[in-house]
Length: 364
Image (cartoon, rainbow, N blue to C red; front, side, top):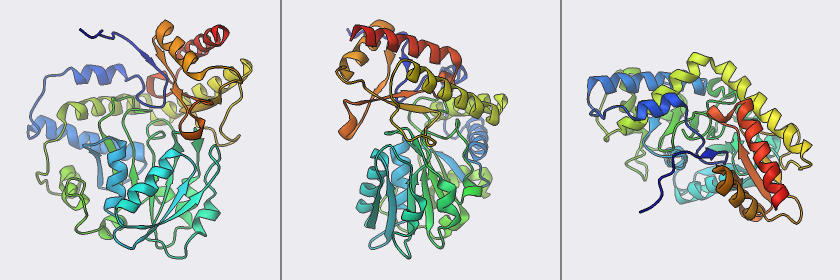
């Protein structure tokens, strides 16, 4: 019989620890997806998502998919055969955008950057004179880098701007309307403090009017999904059976974040990220992401020469029930990724992970 884990400190780039309010909501009795109580819950969740997205978009909703499903929804609804998609690539998830856009039939213009560096908006905007979409990652999970999405939105011209906000929503400043984001997708498992399984998604009226009318995906067709957020659009149409328990958890987390105050939550993430970076440097470790573009929600640090990355991570898991993330791609053995997201964006969590890492390094 497999062991049952009663607790785990999750400081990796993937699922972070959930807010207690979320866990309580996930234990509520399951109700039907057409139950009036659930319909009201869904409407409140969509309203909360509009707040954390910084948007008035009526079509803002929790897609029944993870963040990767949100990425696919963004492209399958905006590009088709021959449409030009300019994609900024400064990490794994920019690369994944290119692949998804290609599979949707787009002609992909890839603008590569050194990993660890932010997106150069001028180079991206100059890459093609008339793209259908411009796409970039706001907070690149693979490198711990924050990029200026507003600079892209201010000069996008006729293009639609797609933004990945998986590692920023609910913890970092995010102003979709002010920044000119036309299609945005995210995930629940990071700063929102909810287990993975939903993708907070938003679509501007401009993007909705210019959507692909018969996209390659039925399930992710925003023309059909528009009725999912019925209170906002004026009508409600059945599309699929909603994951009622996951949405209850998301509603509880949003209520908790908004009760604390979104600016206060963002300040808490900033303080935790700054404290973690300072503590890592005090341990003699070198940070990976470029100065001035380092995420507060996820910190990347170089593995010291001669240290076995996997052995340190295994020591943390075995002795502290603590998970930190390895790097990806060429940096899988040379970078660690440490998250301070949701409830882990706290002084106590930072002290805990720094102390555990110091011990693990001493044993390495």
